Length: 236
Image (spheres, rainbow, N blue to C red):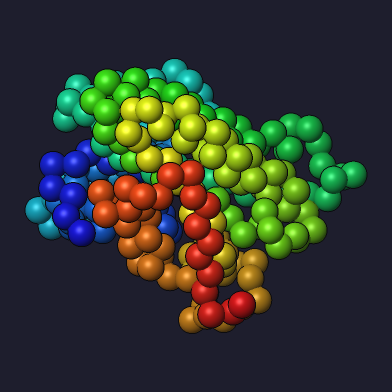
C-alpha cells in the first residue's frame, strides 16, 4: 500500500497497535501525527520513524478534552495542510462489576473511547468535507459481542463507537468520505497479556492489525462504508 503524501492523525500512538500502525503508515510514505496523552509515550515513536527516513510529529493530547483535540488538529493542519486519515485507536480500560463501580469509574472509558472518537471526528471533518476526501477508521473490541464480567463500561464505550460510526457514515456520505470500524479480538500487546489466558501466538499480532487498519484507510477500500469488520486470532 502506498500512502505517499497522505497525512494521518493516529490516536493512542504510543504503544501496542497504535505504535505499530504508526510505523507501518510511515514506512508506506504517510506523514503521521502521533497522538497520545503524554509526550513521553510518543516521543520514541517519532524518533524511530524519523530515524528511518519517515515523517512524524508527536503531539501530546488528551482526546477526552475538546480544547486539546482542537489544538492537535490545528497543529497538524498548520504543519502539513491537511488530514487525510483519522484512526481513532485511543482507549483505556477501567473494570468493575456494575453494582460495585462508581459513576466516575464508569465514565473513564466512555470519555476516552467514545467522547475521544467523537471529538477527533468533529474536528477533522470540516477539512475532509471541504476537500471531499477522508478516511476514518475506528478501533472497537470483541468485548461488545463476547461478554466478560467487569467489562461493562469498556464494552459500552466500544459498542457506542460502532453505532456512532454507522450514523456518521450516513452524515458524510454526500462528501465521498469513508467511515469504518475494526472489531478486534485479543491482540498480543502488553496490556492484554496481563489479563488473557490465551497463548500469545494464538492472538492477533499488532502488525496484522496495522495492515488491516491501513487497508481500510486506503483508496482500494473505498467500497467499505459504515462497515464493522471483525478480526480475530486463532483462538476462535
